[in-house]
Image (cartoon, rainbow, N blue to C red; front, side):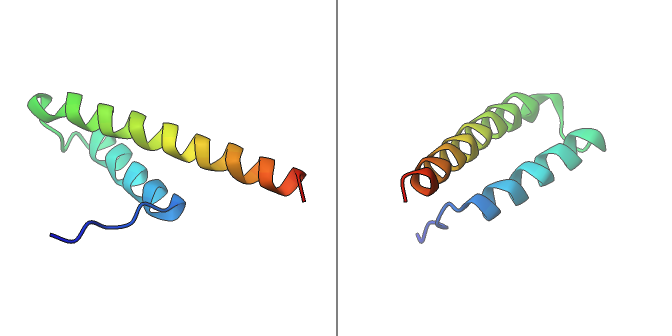
Length: 60
């Protein structure tokens, strides 16, 4: 099983898809908790990536 590499762009796309599904009521209540948890993980990953990138830029 090949796992898709996590990138900032991929994470943003996935977040946008989750938001769209929620806004359009396409997620059943049974799956909502999982989607919200995944969205939280993606937001944390993106925030960390931005902090790391900012730190690297400031240190060059």
